[in-house]
Length: 279
Length: 334
Image (cartoon, rainbow over all chains, first blue to last red; front, side, top):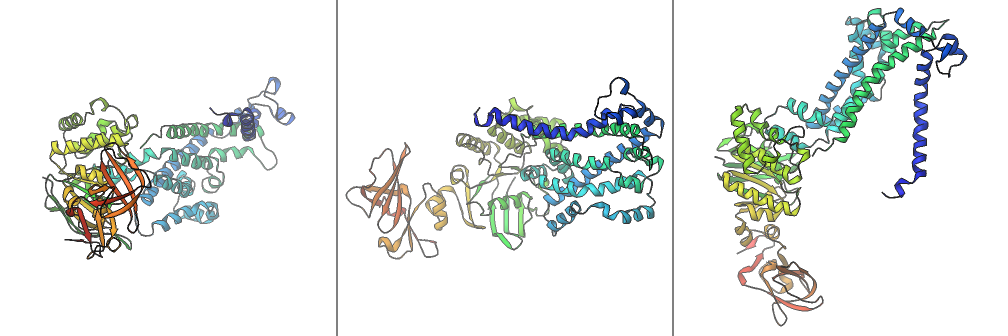
């Protein structure tokens, strides 16, 4: 080990920067979680103190479970997120495979067209989307959200995955063709496992905005039966009075499922990188 | 079973044509090698034979029947790739049986064929391993095994030795030669290495810039090259080319003599030159001489020979039949 790369000063500096960033990133989450366990008085009296002694209270969680059907909201959020994720990954990977594998006329142009969505926010089309959903009778269904989120996630997914799929060896795909595999089998059995790290990246980038979105649930599916968690948490925020215990507890709970999903994908991501002994 | 005919095969990528009117007959059981510099179209031609690339014109026949519209798996071929192209998530055994499984071969027959190929290539200890747990040479043996298992009428090799180190390359070369004798199958092999071509082939196809320059047995190409390109490509070190006018020989544009067909003398000879550099390879010695008018000449002498750089020596062709004469177009003159 050379000294140059392991000087203690450098490593302290690097760690200091990383730790500072970690603290900044985690602080809001930390504040939400500690305050969700406090009484209203304690939240306003000492927002940064830990929920100990008198300050500790589960009133927030009690409200969350008493008012509204939060279990249903969670279920809705999870269904929308997972379904959109599956569709984005499936169709994104398929389109990326076609773009990277086959030579056809207008290939580059098609790729650019599909990537265009990265630069144009889908919310600009909200009015048109709403009209479309009304016309097709999908308002107040989870399908409305799933379709919109799939469209929203596809551009980035196609862009990232097609770049990765270009790196998969042609010989491997050709070996599959000579062994008589169909193009679908080559795609599912040979190419997809090799781009798993990229799939995990796309999954994380796609999943978080969907889970956190308030805009489309509010516009397309605000009914009681289709409310998502983020929308459900809004009922504690009023024009004149806000139930902070309820809001904070709902948000603290909302972090959990997405955290679990993230852990699943990030393990895939790391495994993909470390086992990259292909070739 | 395993003849191959190429009739007027052409290939263009967009506006650039990469193969020009390729005609070739390969008899059953022959070992044919396409050799040429990189970018000469030899790999593209192999991919057209395999069905991985469509030709832009002409026809490919395997065993007499036209296969241009037949998918790769149905052509009765097997291919070995430069990068091995083993399925990373399958074990050696599963890699080898994948093609047969896909074709719906009965299980016991697959077992038998895998066992036979594994015995032939001594792969038995590795059958349960994954490609990542094998060395480069072992992976290439598995790739060859995967081809053998299919019992194809035509083997295609795409630069199979390029990724191996020198010692392994010689070893695997011998293995492939032995395999060809044992299986008596037709093999088509692509390489840019003329040593591989000379040592393995029954028939060499020398390609350059999308065209076949010459087809023949290794010794036929060595002794009777048709043109400057083939003369320069076959043989190592490369044939010496001298401008005929510079050395006072009339009736030809270029004179070619192989380094091993030149003799050196201190007293007399046809051309004089100054020693620039000497390479001692043990079994033979390469002497590089700078001539006054004709440029650099390489002389290959057998055994250990010592000369000093700066020394002036005379060289002459050992026999007159070793002197090749080329016309202005680069064609050999007889």
